[in-house]
Picture 1 (cartoon, protein in one colour):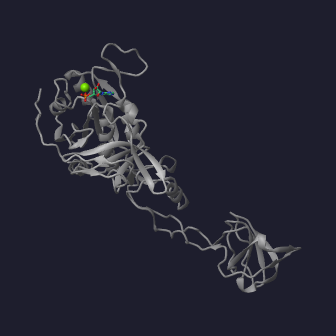
Picture 2 (picture 1 turned 135 degrees about the vertical axis):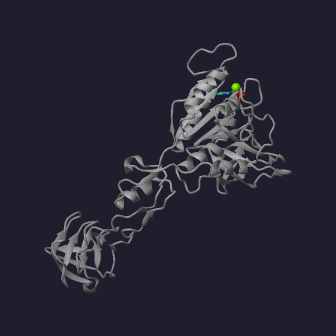
Picture 3 (picture 1 turned 180 degrees about the vertical axis):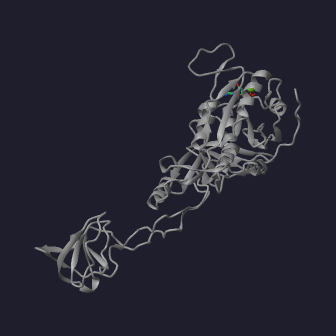
Length: 404
Ligand code: AMP
Ligand code: MG
């Protein structure tokens, strides 16, 4: 077995993230039908195919006319429905019925809403109107050729709609990274089965898959390898064919911790091992060719924190996200938090909304094996390394524990 260094100075969280992102070059872009593009990252600027609106259009159901002819009683010479061509230009002194979204006829410069007119036979009595009233000008939203959504942006629902409206049918999105997850541990059994002595239910596989999928990855069904070098090798060899291999467990210094040694044997080059943080200190990061390899600790909360802080940013960077770093938000501490001089702490907290904003209440049970306690939390609060404590009421950064 190849040896790996057993002693290394832990790297800081910031350095570790920088080292990961430096190796997470965007995957090639691919055209994606809009129906499948929600929450993908746009790889190239998307530009409008048409002006929006494409023609001066009515904002109301009402009557198109010349503002200069108001107030007054005007003959209604035609009706314009949405999606229909205008029969002819409007002449001074005329009105045309028009539907919301209808083409405002040439010659008209205002629309008076139907609620404000009195209809008599083939004429309407209209109050005074300003030029431009209730007319949506051509190109008022965007001009053809202009940028609709910039590269590096996640396609939220409103951005998907903007692309559709501007005629972009197949935006170029960053490819979804293919992720393999291998959980290690002889003691692990799938939930639902019977447990023998010393065995536990495996929980990191489904958790990590959920985190990575919500970050846009394509995650293969996870595998579990027992604490045996051959089993590790078989599972890792397969996983190394993916864009990203994430392992859980077996990355510490015990005699059954085989992950780093096996990865080294398979040609993975370790970039760092151990990060000055809690939970999750014994995290490893390596590369083999273009494949990124994360060795997350087995304790479920450590695994989760490592996934959020390092793997998710890598997945976002691989998709071409403009700002792939963890998207911390600001909240207010509901209780004081002691700082550690040497490492950053990531505490689990409930989020309570108050008039002062998001208040972060640390949960009971901060141990890294306590995944059920952690399930009560809405947020991971960052307590940066340093002296003393963060007082109750002070501002702190947190990562929400919803979809990423
Ligand atoms: P390790 O990092 O392999 O030393 O594991 C640390 C702790 O996490 C041990 O108590 C393991 O039993 C537990 N553990 C490791 N992997 C998993 C997993 N996939 N699901 C649940 N618990 C795990
Ligand atoms: Mg283990």
